[in-house]
Image (spheres, rainbow, N blue to C red):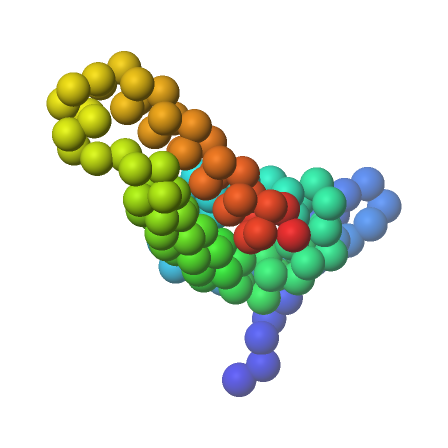
Length: 118
């Protein structure tokens, strides 16, 4: 059965009424949103190819998942390396918080550099 295309008149032109198929609803976290913004600003062709092929949501969800896994692994590794223990947390919570915030910032920068802004 052939597909019927409808048109809308815009001034002197007839423009086709095109609509993308529904993409699956997936939750995309902060890393996925950052990568989406990066693609829209710096790699528009890739962004629009993924969008028009209905693969954007799945792609961003995959990037977000990879980034979160990397972030969690880096937090664990850097915490062990920095000797951040529950004892330190109990004894000097302000010191522990300062060190943990520095580790989180470091992990975020690494994930951004390695996955998000590439």
